[in-house]
Figure 1 (cartoon, rainbow, N blue to C red):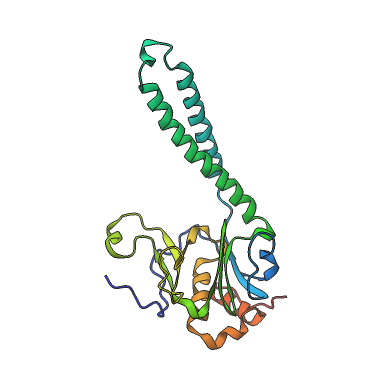
Figure 2 (cartoon, rainbow, N blue to C red):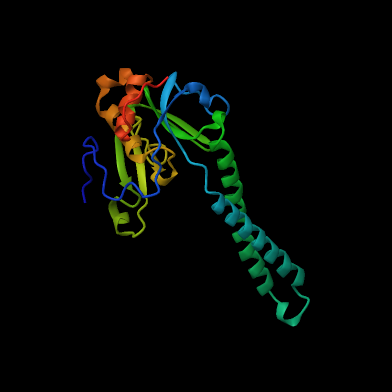
Length: 243
């Protein structure tokens, strides 16, 4: 099935989940990237931060990692001590639980670091709009996408293309597609942000990126209260003066 022309603004039904953020985008200075991220090329940006990971998920990952580690240790400690614990079976069980524990341990550590960095001014993870383009800041990665290299801004879902369309799990995402001019594709040429991870209204975030991508003449107002008021309007907020 052919995709809708990306230059035509389109938000599919069900793309904004009931628990999605309803916050405004923030007008913030580029200094927010100075601690661990590359400085953004624009002095001021309109920022949609990422939410901190749920505490419940972090605790669950930690408990599973601890439980799997305990099972691995207990099985290895008992290996060969009784007839039922002879042979390779205990070691197979230990390897399985060891791998499981390692996976959840890495997930736990990643969630802890994400929670810390997403609540820190200097480590702000986000997608942001500026006069020169789109700034994407994720944990361990950052990229500045000039407007000239943006090929599509889409409100879509995972598994929305080709053979993946038949897959049942479709997570709403904001997708930024890029062409660097050298044939780059894949991860470098495409950025996906799950709408539930945004700490700003997903519809307003999409509208802000899409509007300034398709209206080059309006980009001069970015970084000012004029643009901030326009973006607030995308989120359904009444225009206000932003200091």
